[in-house]
Image 1: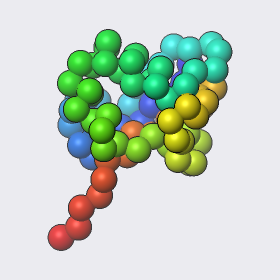
Image 2: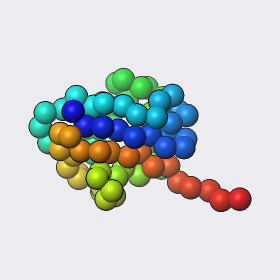
Image 3: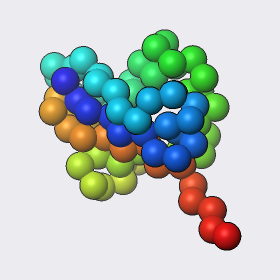
Image 4: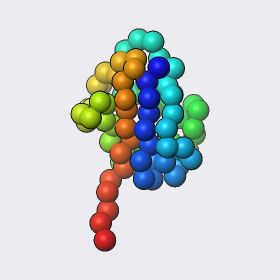
Length: 80
């Protein structure tokens, strides 16, 4: 089970600050977005601009997520 933390706009769109992704083998970042779209359809709006971090490191397309990893959905930050 991987833990997904949702920050800022991601938290607003998904309506939760934390999710559990029931995986028991490695998955790619793309698989995460597919799972999110199935369980939280509004999350598709995040995919084009949200970064995915895994255990504190940003992942690129094709990056692997392991069971028990901590994933963060990080939208762009605006200042003011």
